[in-house]
Amino acid sequence: MDQKLIISGVSGPDDDWILLHRTDLAKLIQELKTIQNARLDQAISFLEELQKTSTPKRRGRKAMSSAERHQVSERMKTYWANRRSKEILANKPAR
Image (cartoon, rainbow, N blue to C red; front, side):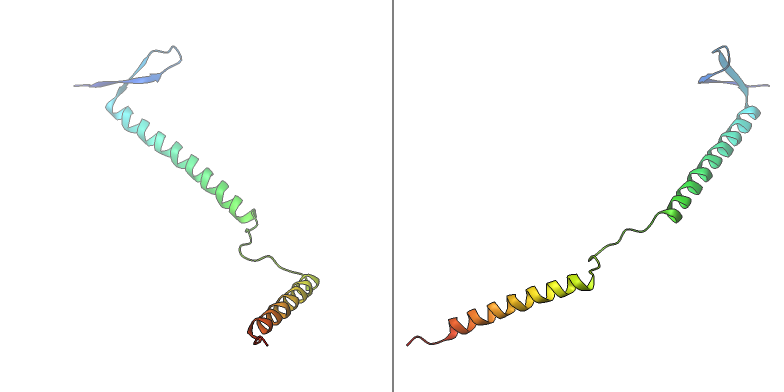
């Protein structure tokens, strides 16, 4: 007994329904898997190449030149000197 299966939504050149034998269905499934695997392989290869060529993003603090470090050092020296002088004035007993 030869069973036939109608797959709706699949159209041929005349937009007619395609009739498939059960053995043809197995072949069709295998072909679809092959196509799917090929597309996945292409997508994975593309993403791997993109990963290799992209530069990693820096996280954390930015690098400072020696001039910038010197400026920060001078600002902090001034800050701490002012802070110490305010503490001394606050702790001085009133006469």
